[in-house]
Image (cartoon, rainbow, N blue to C red; front, side, top):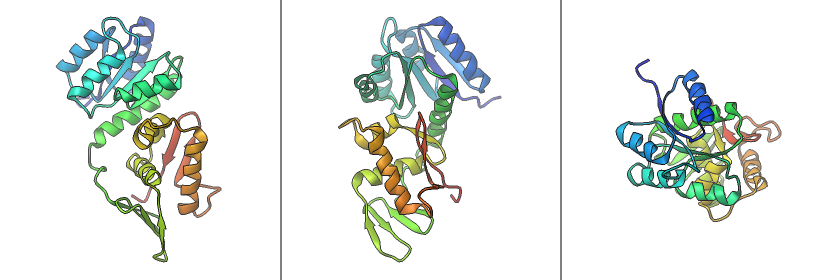
Length: 235
């Protein structure tokens, strides 16, 4: 399989490293492994990767420093932290270092694979979705630059900046689950750690705007334990 997607996995617990490596290889990925931060950076310089998975507490150089170093030369490759450090402060620290996702130990392997697949898909989409200025959902059109929603009868609903940013994020990642951490990084920009209810309220508002029946959503979904997903099979 010539176009195998490549993952750099840095983890100092050998049994966990081998278990994750095996499961990723079963998914069809080519996995390069490192047991310390120094080796991880060396591999990153030598090869091209679609995703970097980093333990935080590693010998030689910790995962946060590895992520910062990678981000100095590469802002595109997705980075995921795997760590036992699970407070909100730890998560925010990780996201500030440039991570795209943050999974705490112990974790479910199925969830890890789901998040990995989503991050790799994003890395392959490149910039093609980043530049759109409007998007149609049903008979309504969102205009991102003017923060407006044009309804079917041509009336206009004003959108807040955060509503617009969250809509754009979900639409860019359409048909993929987007974690609360990714929403925090992109929309809230670390100003505040929003509760699940805060983001839920945004999703409820979007359902009122766009869903034919808000109680049975076809576009905006909450994915328990993961985050949120926008589904649109018309595009």
